[in-house]
Length: 352
Image 1 (spheres, rainbow, N blue to C red):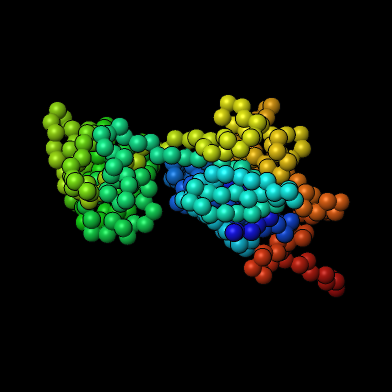
Image 2 (cartoon, one colour; image 1 turned 120 degrees about the vertical axis):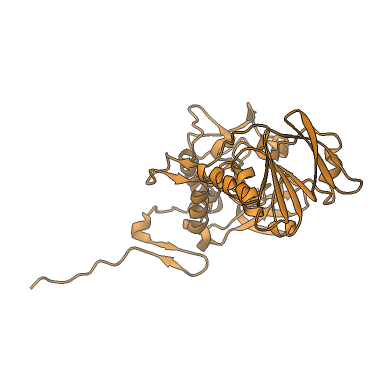
């Protein structure tokens, strides 16, 4: 059983920043996320795309924002349950909660903050016969690159035309024995430097590029041995050990939809007049996953919602105790790891 003060469901920017705000209140956090790494959409969909509306940053890459948020919360030592989906929730008699994931991991928390963005993400799968068979038991179809070493000295075929397909083709070109990138169009929608990098790797023979092309079938009994690709009116066969389709992710509210929450248009209704609490006391929803009058689905709005949510949880855990808000420039920041960040002390010195 994992014990924590606030259990955060969703490791996107709103969920990560909630760890910082909770830490200022001496509240511990643990995060559950269905993806294999923190960052949510920012890490999975557009890590190399710039964001222009984060205060203080005229422009910051989505991946860099995640890196900065992880650095900001490091001293508060959050726990992570990654690559697992929060499946069931049970409210105990004392008002606390037990949340169990699809893999059976149990978490006990005083409060639950759902920061699931647009919901749990599921990979967009190509409509290919028998693909479900090859998804199971390491038979050759992978939708995420969780451990690049798995592809060491293996033949890999990647399909897709966005940042993820480009970035992993580049990365695995130095790991796999061969990398073939297949896209149904000649044009790619990704960062310019990634497109140019793939062009250079193609020219040097480190990446085989097939455009326009589309995977139409597999060959192999117990494991993928090759894929058939339609390109320019003909079908070619490419030997491979792994096929990695990277067509983006589909957001779904997932099992949370069965928790008895008040849901409106695939979003969770909350009380925005006070603390973003749901119709179940002790369960909050912050970020893109919530709904209220005037809602704006912006990262900076999620940061604000996370701040007020943490204040509410503090009062929930410390009824009647008054919290005196102090600016971090005055109070400093004390981490759970013993570190302290504070402004330099002013020097008091007479001028002679």
